[in-house]
Image 1 (cartoon, rainbow, N blue to C red):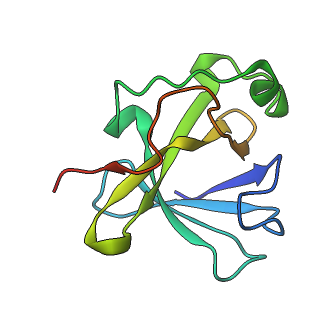
Image 2 (image 1 turned 180 degrees about the horizontal axis):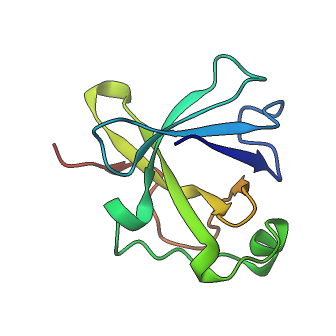
Image 3 (image 1 turned 90 degrees about the vertical axis):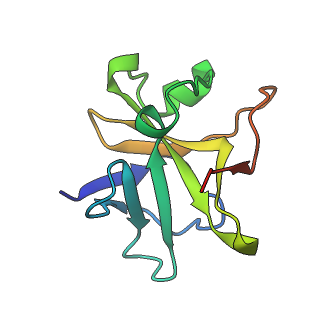
Length: 124
């Protein structure tokens, strides 16, 4: 089932995307397509970090959480962007998309001062 997300800060590289559609990819648990009606060329694949990276535990700042209405941990969903460039599949663990599951508000946040890779290679 599709979910509408509303960025509370411009998505990096797509400042005019004011609503996003998060759609599950059939047959691939925890894999989603992220697109926007306002920006036709925006189509990203994202993974649900809780499913695919259970040891991934980014620390969000007070301001990052405040941007989304300060959701408690049970209402936070974290998605990481998939990149398939250069014959390698990687995910961006340094700038995840944080979602308030209760409201649909979201933001791509940069985890300053944390040691998460920008290009974490996914095993084949």
